[in-house]
Image (cartoon, rainbow, N blue to C red; front, side, top):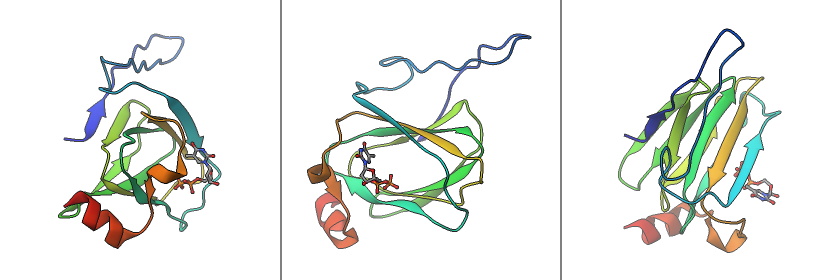
Length: 129
Ligand code: TYD
C-alpha cells in the first residue's frame, strides 16, 4: 500500500504531524517543494523519475494522484494533512482534481535534476519493464 498514515500529535492548541526520515519514510530527504495555486481542471506531473522517490502530502485541501507502474493505474485521494503517498522511482505519476485551497507538499530523495525526469510515456514503459 502506498498510502501512509502519519500520527497526529494533537492537543487543545491544535494538531502537529511529524515526518521523520528512516521512521516514517524510507529514503533520505534531499529536497522539499510544495505546489499551490493550482486550478481544478489542470493536471500536473505526468512524468516519472529514474531514481527519485517522492512522498506527497496534501497539507491543505485535497487532490488526487494517479500512480502507474506500467501495468496498473491506481488513483489515490489525498485529503488529510496526516496522509502521505509514496511514489517510488520508475512510477508514472499524475496529480489532478486539485481543490482551490490545495497545498501539496512533496519530499524528494534527490536534488532537482532534469536528467532524472522521464516525460515521454513510451520511454517510461521501456524503462520500467
Ligand atoms: P514541474 O516538474 O513541471 O512540476 P510538476 O510537479 O507539476 O510536474 O516543475 C515546474 C517548474 O519548477 C519547472 O520549471 C521546473 C521547476 N522545478 C525546480 O526548479 N525544482 C524542483 O525541485 C521542481 C520539482 C521543479
